[in-house]
Structure formats: structure tokens, C-alpha cells
Length: 212
Image (cartoon, rainbow, N blue to C red):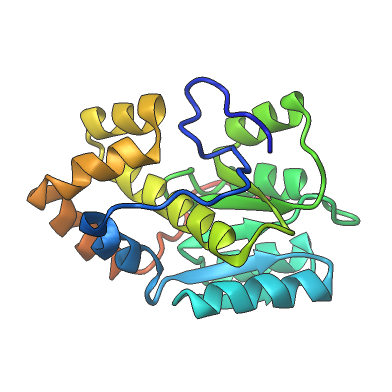
């Protein structure tokens, strides 16, 4: 798989073997998935159904969109906790979709996981990171790998939403595993995560500029 680059904390890798977390973090994983709403965007009906089934089995509530324009309409009506999107779509690509989304939602308000069947170039990865994408995974990856990356993207957004500089630094410099260890030993943050997981997704800020 693609090697991690310094500072990306493993969120951008596609390892052949999925990482496993310790038993003390199992509660965080349940918090990440159970009852959380995900919107899956892909022009392929096969991959829409595949990814939907994988995430539903993990405990997510999943809606699907066949294209970026439909996804935008669904997002504005009822934003999910996580967006999972393809990149290579006709008329409006996944990159264009992300650019439109970031006009209304920040990365911590609406985390994004990219699923793609293509090998990503460095400049494409840089662009995704600039757009606040929290991970990239191959469509043909094992089911538990896709779930792992979805959990990681949602977890990262929850950490950033706490506005805790120490945890944000741990996430950026040492990756999700280090941030998880910090959370596991911090009952205050664990309580915040549990409370945030039960809240609905954030609507766009009042007066935010709408993309046309």
C-alpha cells in the first residue's frame, strides 16, 4: 500500500493488514459507529450497495446518493455525521463536491472519507488534505478496513470539535492511535465524546454562503 507521509498519522495509508486497537478503546469504537448517520456518494450502484452494507453491518445508519448534485441536496436538507464519497464521478467529481461542501461546513462539522479504486498521486492527496478529508481507502479493501477508516474519520472530527490543543496536536503529529490513548485515559474527554455522539450533525452556520 501507499506509504504514510510524515504528519498524516496513518489516516492516509492503505495497509494490507488492518490495525487493531486495544480492549480499552472498544467503547470509543462503539461510540463512533452506533446510530451515526453516513451519506455514501458513488455513481456505481455496485459500490454504493457494497459500502452501504459494510457500514450498516458496523452499526452506522446509511443513506446513499448516485451523484454529487444529489448528495449536495441531501446534505443541505439533513447533514449526516460522516460523508463517504467516490472521486471519479461524471459532471461533478468528488473533488468538486468537497470544494462545494467546504463553503458551508468545516472539516470538524462534516468529516469526509474518500473511497476510490484508483492509485492516488501525491498532489491529489495534498488537495484532499487541504479540503479537510480525513482519510482515503481503496474500494476493494477488506470490509473491516473500510469500517476502521470510517471510525478514524469520525473520531478525528470529534477530537477537533473538542477544541483541545493537546489532543489536536496528538492527532496531527502522532496519529489516531495516540489520540485514542489520550482519550482512553481522560474521563472528561470520554464523556464529551459520548455526549457529542448523541447529538445531530451541525447545520451550516447562519448566513453561510450557499454554493450554486
